[in-house]
Amino acid sequence: MQVDHSLVAWITDYLTSRPQYVRLQGSGSDVSNTGAPRGTALSLFLFTLYTSDLCFHSGSCHLQKFSDDSSIVSCITDDNEEEYRALVENFVGWSDNNHLQLNISRAKELEVDFRRSTKRSLTPITIRGEEVEVVNSYKFLGVHLNSKLDWRDNTDALCRKGQSKLFLLRGLRSFSVCTRLLQTLYRSVRASVLFFVLGGTPTKGMLTG
Image (tube, rainbow, N blue to C red; front, side, top):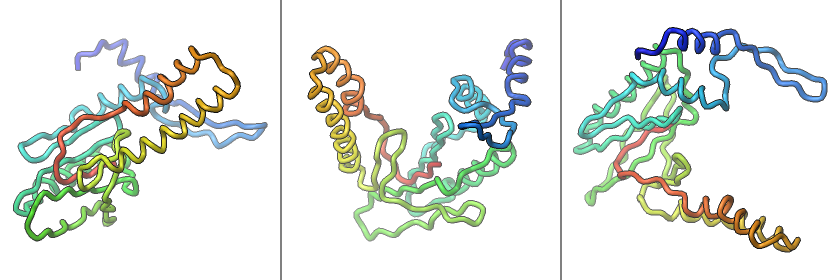
């Protein structure tokens, strides 16, 4: 990627032999050596670079990546799942070859069926002998998507979250907190929840993990 040699050396040193442990009230955990520390901006950037060669896009199948969340989206016609399943296998194989562990228990498959005729469920995806759970609703990057592609699940979740934030504001108002501070808190903790949305094109077939 034509990165300066001194910067590569610095990053190598940053990722090498980084012992970490947790200490609480005089007790400490075992020391472990990890790669990129969690919670740092550089870790996400380096992970994106590390996985930059993992990509796929065709007329009916697409690999969507966002940091360490990846989704395989496919439009399946005439029950032809060959490309979809091949991409899943390639994704798993690439992860194995590049020393990345997949948390299969967190992988979910969401099927959206646009057919008006008799509907037949697709055969679930299997990874390393473990069947991926098929769900009717899934929270992806903060947005609740369901198999009907309506906003009911997402709206219900936003209402519940918004009510909890409103309870906080009501409590602060009861302590006679100034209006200006309440407005600032509203914009930061409640309005940000209500106006958060993720745009995208609904498609059929999704594997995410």
